[in-house]
Amino acid sequence: MKHVNIFTQSSVRSPNVQKGKIIILLETIINETPYTKEFIQEVEGNWNETSLEAVRLALTKLKEPAEIVIWTDCRYVELNIDRAKEWKKENFEHKGAKRKYWEKWNEIFELLEGSTYKVTTGQNEYTHWLVSELKKGA
Image (tube, rainbow, N blue to C red):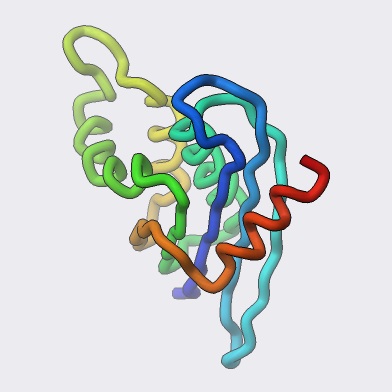
């Protein structure tokens, strides 16, 4: 199975809904050579929502299951991905209502079908580049 690193960053840093951009960098290594492809998209939402959208969009770019490491700048994604798997078993319902962002979580799990994955936050080799790309034209 192919290994893919997904690096995401959002320009939105607020709990309030606002317009911003997300950037995604996909990296795979073939014969010890890294290959990357990046995507930038305008979004509207809060930090958690736009970060989930970045992960969702990145996963739509994959053509087959893979070993995936997702690097995100948002702890909400990292801390809740395992919880969201449990929420899915309950049809994302809690106290008679659907959980926040349930549609995005549901699609993320559909896109992860057949893949293994790990989500992590923190600095990585692309962090500064991702941030500088988001600032261009801001």
